[in-house]
Amino acid sequence: MRGRPAIWWIRRDLRLFDNPALIAALQRGGPVVPVFVRDPALLRSRHHRRSVRRQAFLDGGLRALDADLRARGARLIVRDGAPDMVLPALVTEVGADIVIAEGDVSPYARRRDAAVRSVAPLELVGAPMVHHPASVLKPDGAPYSVFTPFSRAWHARVLPERHLLLATPVALPRVPGDLMSAAIPDAVSLPAFPAGEAEALRRLRRFAESPEAAIHRYGADRDRVDRDGTSTLSPYFRFGMVSPRAAVVAACEADPEAAGRTGPAVWLSELVWREFYLTTLFHRPRVLQEASNASWREIVWRDAPQDLRAWQDGRTGYPIVDAAMRQLIETGWMHNRARMIVASFLTKDLLIDWRLGESWFMEHLIDGDPAANNGGWQWTAGVGTDAAPYFRIFNPVLQAKKFDPDGAYVKRWLPVLARVPLRLVHEPWRLGPLEQQAAGCRIGRDYPAPIVDHRGIRERTLAAYRQARASKA
DNA sequence: TGAAATGTTGGGGCG
DNA sequence: ACGCCCCAACATTTC
Image (cartoon, rainbow, N blue to C red; front, side, top):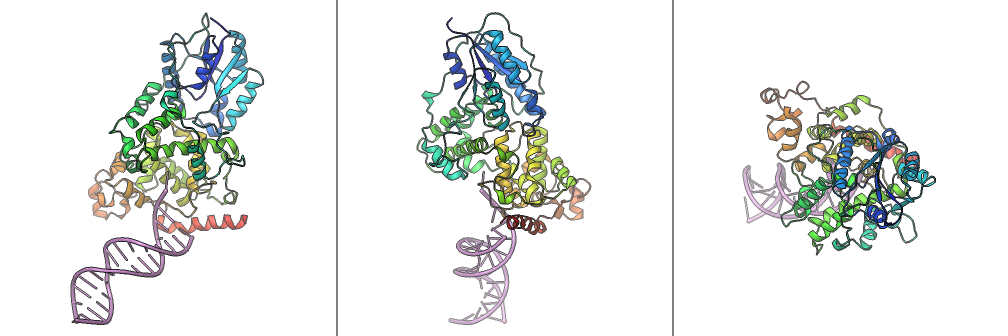
């Protein structure tokens, strides 16, 4: 065997297919030591706030990766501690001459990598995306702040093609002897999201790679909270169990003509939004602390812990909001349309700081990613650089009627509504006393009365935003 | 990747 | 036959 060992430091690229960092490590010609460092600092950071399910999903992913590595003559080494302590020690232990990892974008990740680089020979390869954040810039070299021109520039760059995706290695040469590895705990099972690369690739194939696949109905179906019209790949993207480049290849192959905007092109656009938010965080780490649009930093949010609690628990009295919040708590995932509805409700109806919603999502989402989550919240709250206009306020009843027309979604997550007639299932407070009795859904007893009156709340919100804008101008 | 208020149009009922 | 009103349907404007 030629060459000294290379350490393949795995962070959020838990896969063997199309993994540039892994291939770079293999090309060194020596043994490859795959290592995952469990970094206690990550559990304390606000934007990586601990979620039991996300932790379980990660643990499951590590186990799956270890199994895939063992099938190729290697194994996953898990070590606990600060990376700038653990990695230099491991370098010495195995006599490695390089540590290779995929680049990352969050402020914490970049500080961590800088610290490691000062004590170990670290080489970063790529980023968890198709186009590296430093590569999609305006002609003057500044990062884009508006999505549409970003998307245009993103598409103008060379896109991956299937024959360029990096094959899964058939074998990984290992160092002689046995390296110590911490045990991976037996995780809570997540029936809706089995962890691992094999499952991720199954989902990508099922979603995108057949003539009848859901991707072809994505434009129409993705907003229907009562249907399985989305890819459900977000947790797998979060931990790199699927390659973003492979996803883009699948989308482009599903619609080679890029005809219309009904299916694959719409999904591809969602992938570009993901890259937009990762890129934004890379260039503007402050977005994690404050609104990226300065005029919206002055909004006086309500201090309303009881309302916040009701929102978190799914007790607002608006079925579409409560159903979505229950789905989040019970499964660690929420339909994207529902995310917009509950975010609009927290920020626009309750006038509660978007950062509290962002934080709650991070505590519960399996796919919780600082960049995408922050971007989504700033967008809905209307405080981002390229956000929804502040006066765009979702009406939870209209949204529900439009995107859950049969009431199947609210009834699934709120069984108390099971016998409420469809006519009023999205606004049960309008049921007459006898109807409430007959449906077993007495408002204020079996199901809460609305905690705010959506129709009456509009002016309060518009006033708060107007005032912020005026105080800044 | 809204919603509500306001404006316009046109068909039909009616005296 | 005609003007009038009502109102749904659609378009435009405003936040």
